[in-house]
Image 1: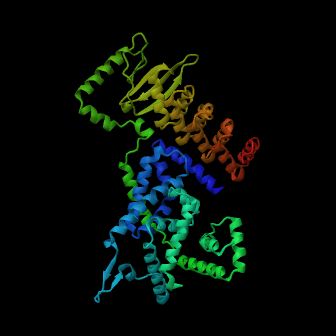
Image 2 (image 1 turned 90 degrees about the vertical axis):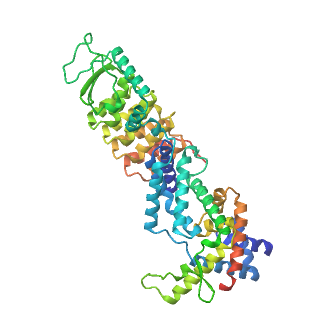
Image 3 (image 1 turned 30 degrees about the vertical axis):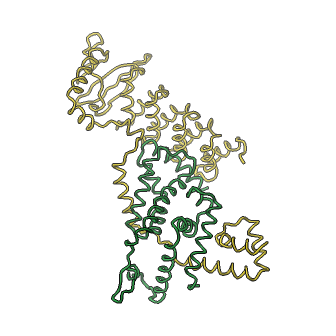
Length: 197
Length: 312
């Protein structure tokens, strides 16, 4: 029932926004922006890039809201915009690796600057913390080896808990293709992280 | 069932994406196949391992910063919206006039000619002058109107007297069919601080709901007017269009769901009745029937839903 209520609410806000009511659009943004920011943050890896994706996505939605015809939910529509922007970002990132916050130490070995940021949480156990950080770094590294599309399907399924049918709709593909992509992504990740099990 | 099929579908099983029958078959198979059972255990453990590293939630600061930046960008973003096209921008208008002497002259001449031709009576802090000896009234220019003082309909006639302020108070007369009178009524409906005047103007406008601008003003009043009486008047004016005009249906639904005044909500519920078979109306009725705080609205919504044919 909550979902249905949200859809009614969205429909009213979309129609208002289509008539130029910016307040209604901003309200609509608030319904989705945290999820959008979370997706962008995890996929781009930096707050700055996540903010850029967020801004581009909602500006694009604002400019094109007039052409929204209710053929899909606003949820699917906004995720389509965001995933396209994130896919572009991932493709560029694959080509341009110099953005990675990796530096060389005195012996020529590489380390990730983010790994050096201390965890200031109260009561943090340093040993457990180190293991958690190592695990995170390994998973991030393995995720980066996936193709942008595999990464996207895995992200939407594993971290955002979406149904593969919805993932297919968002990525303009079939549920079957989304299933195959998830299978491939998981196999690759298992291969890359085999020694951690 | 072959082990190959099971191995291909274990990932989907771990993610809860298998259909019920396929899930049942897979579970039956792993119960008697040690290799597949080991693979399922490994897949589940790997899933758990990945789940230890959750996607970071954006911090409240990041959310706030992103929203603020977006708001700034929206200020300058172009969207060919309806209200934007209708909105009167005095600064822009003056800028255009100042850069277009020919346009300014044309407007002046037209305004003068229009004033000579008009039959309005205009008073500038003076008692009314009879129609025969009346000086020509200038057309009411929205930019110069600072408020509407009063609206009176002469009993038994279709003449309406409107007293409004510009730099000084003016008065004009005309029938409801007169566009200038309509303009003043529209202005009063949207802008006046005096709710009595808004009520009078909306009341008169409800006689002309077929005029597009009038309907927009009624929608605006129903949505934004702070006075429930004005909203009720607007609602009554819009009632006949619930079935055919989607915008009207939406605003009436909005009033039904969100209006703070129970009277407005009850009236909205009554007016939405002819469109109850519409999907959006049905959805709202279902929500109201399930959990509206007002017992009356809840029971009425249930009654209306009960009269509808079932949808699969």
